[in-house]
Length: 253
Image (tube, rainbow, N blue to C red; front, side, top):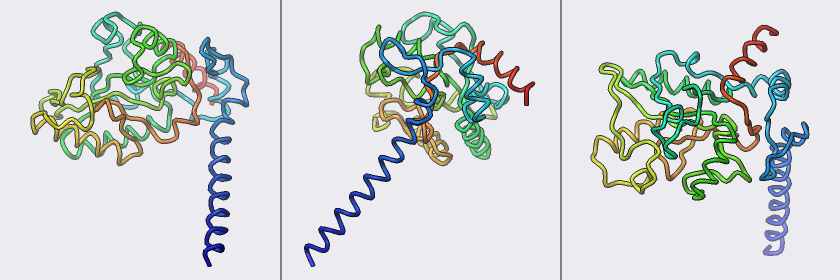
């Protein structure tokens, strides 16, 4: 009986291993198929608008969607388009927030759900060009708060969003346990020494995001990743280049 159970366990383990390998290969297939150029850290990236147009034409889910168009009633505070950010200088020429289409549509659903509770979304950042991630790493070098450029970030894939909440009636931003982009334990999801209102707001945001397929980043209450980010392309294109490309792609549909 014991031997039979061991054999069954081994077969089950082989099956799980086979399935996991299949999923892993499938996740990597999207990038290896296109033989993308590699960054100086060895990561394949979509760094030319012609490549972007091709991958979007072949799979519309690869489109990076302008969130100002998709969520016209949201509030925006794109600090990376100002000098009020972690590196104290302007990183984006325009105050844009883009997201990969499936994540963008899920965020729209979260926004609709929050409206019923009297809240709206305040967006800080979405898609982030890979070059900015490289800059962060080379200046800060702490991968607790910045991504490793050998791997790229969820933001580089358009599958992460930094956000908060505002009150629909007053338009005022809701309090949270820390400031956005704060690099202290107050930013952690398990930080519980804040006031009750701020903790409640953090919980409301988390619940709304998890309901539509996003997951937390433990060290940043504002950061959420969308499911399936591992299988997505890493982009290194300016927001304006993406906007112009999307116009031509819309015309060709």
